[in-house]
Image: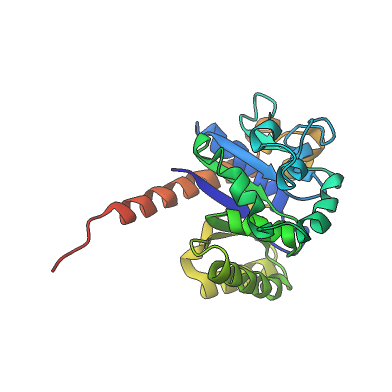
Length: 268
């Protein structure tokens, strides 16, 4: 059964793309079939996965506008990364305007991915750092949202806006959408503010906060410039170990959820 994750936060610089690339690689390392969909015009997930963002013949732009079938836009990443990719680049900026005039504009991505959804165990969508039509498409296509949060002063303020957007999408466009988890990123345990915000997140959201914490890590920051996930760039680094732990936590949550859904209803 395929799970589609949107990794979203309208605040930039919180580790969204880093989490998208490294979670895709970490899930692939557990022998899961993974597709990473870059829907951010910056194309950072594409280059971070080791693909020149202007090299593929087709990108997510042509998929959203219906110029090609989604299968034609899927490319491989370097063998050691182990996952498939639909690339994005600066041309995607044009999709914002084009989508406004299209029928079922909020469902373009969901309808496209439906053709290949069953080919993968996980599909991960890297969203832009804004709540625009591209992000709406991602949230409409997703089953679950992973929200990376840097533990700093403005984190909770931005989170409220995102939660309101997710609730609107759920009520109008995608009733099955839910929060998969809140991921604390760039965490420095020596910083009292990081600890305070972390405690507030747990107080407000309880078990929706992943137990795995992504630390500040030099290797994690260096990996994108080498076009590689951190688990291939430096598999022994704290960043690599943390994203592998996150993949494990997500797999355990998925298994627990499936068992709950399959359990027979009590009649007493």
